[in-house]
Amino acid sequence: MYGALAPLVGALVTIMSGINSKFSEIAEPVVAVLVIHATGLVAIMVISLVRRDKAPRTKVRPGRIPLWHYLGGLVGVGTVFSSNYAFSALGASLTMAVALLGQTIFSVITDATGMLGRAKYPLSARRLPGIALALAGVAVMGGDWRLAGPALLVAFGAGVTSGLSTVLNAGLGASKGVSFSVRANYAVGLMTTAIIAVFVRPSIQDAAAAVVEAGPFLAMAGGLIGIVVVSTINVIVPRLSVFMFTILMFTGQTVAGIIMDARGDGGIDVLKIVGTAILLCGLGLDTLLSGRGKS
Image (cartoon, rainbow, N blue to C red; front, side):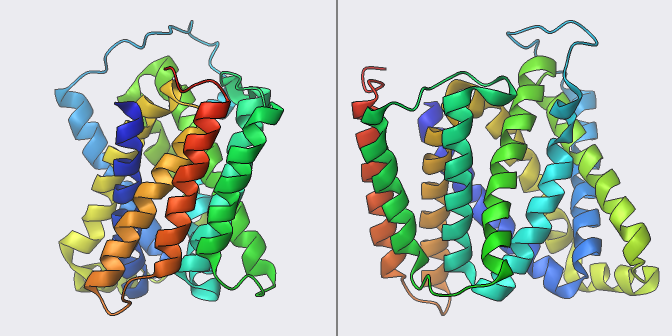
């Protein structure tokens, strides 16, 4: 059931990214991220007043939760800004492929070492063919890899920070409850963006005019969808390996992107379809060879 939810989360992430990207084109990036986090924080606070958190299965005594569990929102802000830069420099397809490469490598290391409090999934030789096939799918989706420059490193970093924020938020959710984790994610993200805004100093008058021009849907939808995404991730990630979650979620992202491109002027990207198929084969091979096929 949780494996089936992961692609749906990926599809929501693609929709959310499209909305946030359009909003950022109208407003300055810092203003857009501020509004997105403020909307999400207000919404989750209202939800929390109506519906209390269920007690997490693993109880952690007060004061024993590592401080770094609260940094998911800070890392997430870095993901947003780095993704925006990479998209403008490399285009969507190559950015997604390089980001997935970074997220996949991070997930494999996290599973193998059990760092950040995660369960260990040792990197045995039997897993290498499946992982290699999954990375081959990434290479196919990337298309032209001859582009060079800092944008490639930024896209790779966006994938790593995306995986890191996912693990941090899920760890906090397992200890303090899903709603608490979502509130912390938006609150820390909002504070981080506010500090950045102090140095960037966007015009308040221009920012207000841009938000009005964008309209309530573009201004609020990204933050509201983000609540669903972060909440669902908090439920799924503790029950799957980070590698499996990464591949399944990205499959949903890719399928949603293909559909969105087909409905627009981009047409159908054959490389994305082939790459996604190879990714799924790699995931299936990894599952069988690692002995997790029984479960």
